[in-house]
Image (cartoon, rainbow, N blue to C red; front, side, top):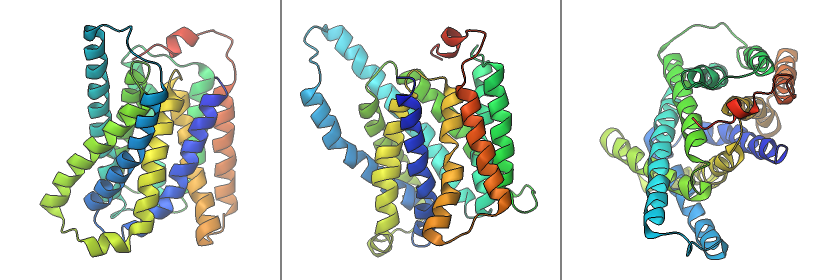
Length: 305
């Protein structure tokens, strides 16, 4: 279980890292809310047959009382709605931020959730060991060398990305709260349709979507919907279950490294020595955070928020 969950989150980071290419291309055709709505609808639809198969082949609930089933449905619905609202808010800020700031700054500022998650967790009594904090510091240094290849200044887009990082931190912690209590795949399916519904309101109010534009962007939208949303966020919920959210956020922050590698392989963008050094620091941070610690705080770290 200890190795399985980090590997699932690493796969999640890989899918998300490659998705930066899809997001960049997709924004050439459609607006932020339209892109977010379309990918979320696809993500939810992709999971519907998965939910049906798991429901058919999964264990029965005949032993549960009607009151227990109602409570379970309420928890599932509440978790899906909360996750969907957090996901929509974070993704919307990210999409709009990409319009006003560079990709390098976007990657650095978005991945700052690796620092925000443990800081928020402190307010809920969740403590992290020294190695985890060292991993956070090392990962931030790696992100700096990896993403910030030019001067760093704050503009409107940067501020949007900072808000995005805070909201993604909230999303991680909401998942940490609900994933042990309910079915992760079902909750993920609900969160996508909630996200799509909220994004559809923004799309109708502020944008002018057209079928021709969506058809022109079908490849990036399909990748972002089926893989980045449908598979990626579901794997996040499954992989995060029972893990320290700080360590989980460190692993998922590898999407920044993978996005650079994807740009190199897909778009032909070469890695500079500075970026390679950043990748080395990021991987070192993940290894450091996974090392066993002398003071056994596993119960405190794995307590539910």
